[in-house]
Image (cartoon, rainbow over all chains, first blue to last red):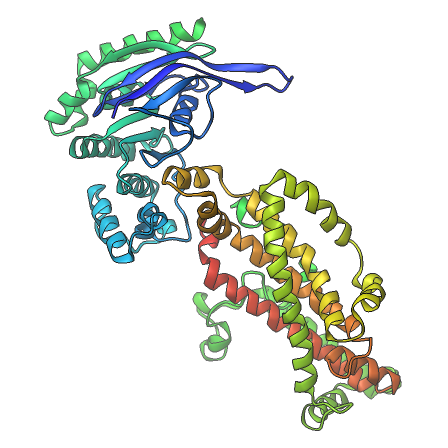
Length: 259
Length: 296
């Protein structure tokens, strides 16, 4: 399931009636099973790009293809996890996870079984009956991830999903993302402005910078895979190699922003 | 939190004695047994002050009538009103018992509420979700909203006659704007992300409406229902002024013709008590249906 973005441009109407270009000439091909991190400063257009892939907004120019299907709106081949969990507070955790199955008319028993499976995958065994308000921020994002996974999308789109969490919870969740990626083999596109997070998670890091946003850097990264081999430990973040990579990324982002 | 109460509820719409958060669980049960009162069973000071105020007003009423300062024709004594209330309940007044009057009034209000909900919720959704819907329907609702029901009562009678239909229609028209406006506000306030997530999970437009927009707007719709019940109940007396043979409003009106002031006062107390019970009922319904909105 390759994802192809071809000469994509997005312009938004400005208050004075003109148009502001947010993204310009984005070309990107994402292969199945990659964990691509879109990295950039706030306002660089990385979330706009993710929303375009999700089909939430229409690109002004260019095209997005998932295999041989052109993206024209949201679809179940692309699951989303957003920064605000957007859970449905009138449903409990299990019903939230099973929501996509309910839309497809899956029977209640099967829905519950598959929702419990997905909850176990994100480390929330036995929390199915909890109301949304009884869950912590980290747990909510786990439910949110399980909700996207249970619909079995080919591509998982994550828009700063850990941005609102405290530092320790975020580190745990980063390990969870790597774990889920490894176990499910999903293609993941992950938006963040965190340098550490990008280096730690990405099998490939794409830096978006400048106004309008362009791809300033696109390279493979094996730090995440190596962290996985070490048991997904955060220790790799304190190696000199990691620090050097981080400084290099920082340089690219700031150089891009000055253009 | 801001989205859970999209429209402001005027304080006067709420009964004075019940704090907006409801009577604390166990307060009435334990007030006597715990005496000094553990922290868990403490009755809020505001409740005591309100109770004392009501007791004071009743005492003042009693003194004014018992001392003869105000003639019984203008202000019958509390005990004569209570006695009268009992006789209306058991023997009746103008060919019907209190229960029959009440039932007639409640039927009108709830028939009107059902009609107002069936029409008002879809209209509110159309205003909240569609530009065309808003353009077409909003002026109509904004035109209807500020008109006192008494002003269009004569027109409704010309159109619908003096039967039950006209009464339900007038009450329903008074109930419609609060339900429409609350539903529209609730539908507009639905978080974009909640809708987007559903679309990414494959929801059709109808499914988004049913599974995301409606539940999201339900707290607001119930708030609108509460305000509408208040508006409908206050319109009741006006609607029953014309050619009714039963109803609490009709009972008060005919009592006034006979200068039976004790019946008038008893009727007013009944109307207040029913309004209080309706308010409490909707609050319980809110707790049962949209308890989740209290936590977000």
